[in-house]
Amino acid sequence: MSDMSDVSGRRPGSLVDRVLDAARWAPSGDNTQPWRFELVDDERFVVHGFDTRAHCVYDLDGHPSQIALGALLQTIEVAASALQRRVAVTRRAGLPDTTPTFDVRLLADASIEPSPWLRAVPARSVERRPMSTRALHAAAKQAAAAAAGSGYAVRWFEGPGARWRLAALMFRSAKIRLTTEEAYRVHREVIAWGRRYSPDRVPDQALGVGALPLALMRWAMADWRRVQFMNRCAAGTWLPRIQMDWLTALRCAGHVALVAERPPQTVDDYVEAGRAVQRVWLALTLQGVQQQPEITPLIFARYHREGLAFARSAAALRRAAAVADEAAGALGGDLPRVVWLGRVGYGPAAPARSTRRRRTELLVEPAAAAQAAQAAPGSPHG
Ligand SMILES: Cc1cc2nc3c(=O)[nH]c(=O)nc-3n(C[C@H](O)[C@H](O)[C@H](O)COP(=O)(O)O)c2cc1C
Image (cartoon, rainbow, N blue to C red; front, side, top):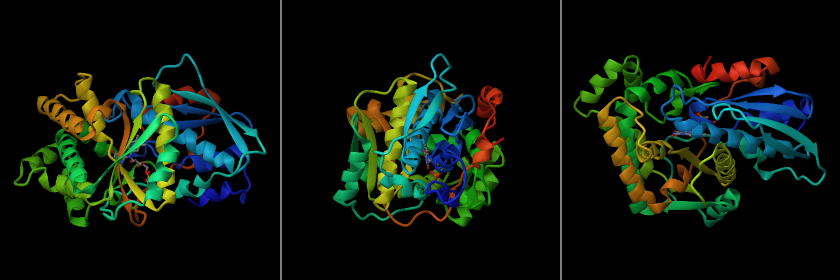
């Protein structure tokens, strides 16, 4: 995070280096950082995006990765503003949706003011522990709505009734997360055990679970048969779901949904949505509001809506149908246009968090760029 000193210009380094050092703090699902950078010159670079749909059940059609890419592009813009640069981005035509690729140019523009969101870039982080139930100030909600920008509405779910409803949704969705082998395979890869920080995964200490349940989780997750055994035990999936999903969904100020004017369809729609997600998240951060994304029910609901079999288990598919019903009840007709859902509340920043790969690790040579994009989805932690 000290890398941010680059953006304020205290450290040497090219313009592009300084912008990328800040921008890599953009969020991505499970901290996969689905981007690699090819430097062209001091003002131009290429973002080689990829997605993890081939091995990650949550990356449905690559949309979460595309949202992350949008968040990255937004963060590039925020970082560039500190250097009085306007950002021109063009997505390369004719490439597969699995490798969205963007040519980026930083253009000198004396009229650009440093973005107030700049200091929120490294401060923004996921809070998975319970938060304060103190109601959000009107100013925080206004800042979020203004940051969403045109084309997006921010919808709040506050008060005990609304939180209860969202808690029920999260509780139901978590059952799929805990009982589906396809999800297990993802979790096995993305959790960094015994860690407070992780540059390429999610450290276990950032999961918002106490030491004892964490130790049990670690033991169980070493083998799918152990997970199945735990699921059959007395309390089954109830204990982890109550702690990680139900209680946390109640212990917050409320939930926030970002609703697009039209249902997103194209890669560009999801990238645009990701930009709005990051703007709202940065604005909330500046207001002292923490957030935990709650994306899984949206994904399971969509799998069901589109009739896609995401798991071998028939029970998982039935549960996705129930999640879709519950989500429709909670979000109403907005559901197909909801691009983001999160729980929000006041509280200190989480003491454990994902960090990022070093900028130099994210750089690729022009010839290697295509290869990296191909190889990376199979081994996000390689
Ligand atoms: C598209 C997307 C989906 C995400 N889904 C979830 C989620 O369902 N639950 C969660 O706890 N975090 C979720 N996250 C948060 C990431 O795990 C987090 O951004 C990443 O690990 C980096 O950590 P940081 O945001 O604290 O820097 C999501 C992030 C993105 C961009």
